[in-house]
Length: 257
Image 1: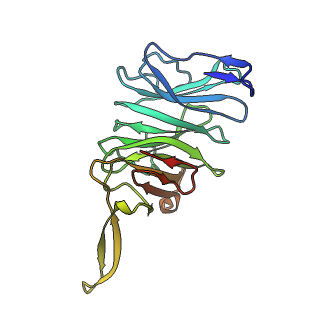
Image 2: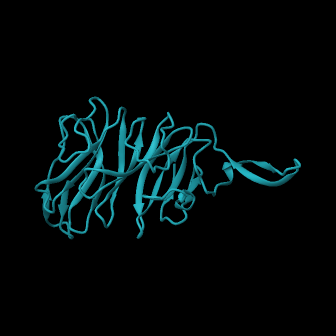
Image 3: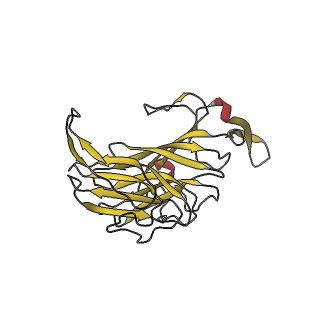
């Protein structure tokens, strides 16, 4: 990790961090005091940890890490791992004004640390995206949830707005059960399901959306990181996007798969 002068003419600091095997940094952010945070995944059983939530790293498996440096990167303020029984990958990190580290990624593990108020408490069985929030000292997970449907999900990008609502972008192969409030691609429309009244008459039609079997579709998932019971319907807003070139409403991102 390196810090450069605004003109790139000087290097303020440059440092290594890692263990004896492969260590991959996928996310980087800096808080208001100038402390740098990195996240990613490691195969090293000896990746440096300090004030870690979990004290052991699974051998021969990818483990998620989140590391915070002081202002000149001369020491670690914390370095923690989120350990699960199967491969897990952190792909992005954002630090909010409270110095909470918000991370996203994907996992093949059914035992990720998930909090009681998660959007999705259970692993789908195929591979799910996740969204987790660490406290300012990195020694506690204050919110963590799976994000997934009946097939595979991968989350790759994360952003926060001015009220710390999280926007997570990724891809899914799920045909059913992936939550969505809006579908903006005609190719996802499948059929109308009738809603029957007491006498058996059709009183309304509900559009049903399904994906092409085996294909990857983009998604944008918006949520508050700490919803209250009974408010999930207002705190979750998911948009499914079709394969191809689509513009994400509320985002400056053009997605191409």
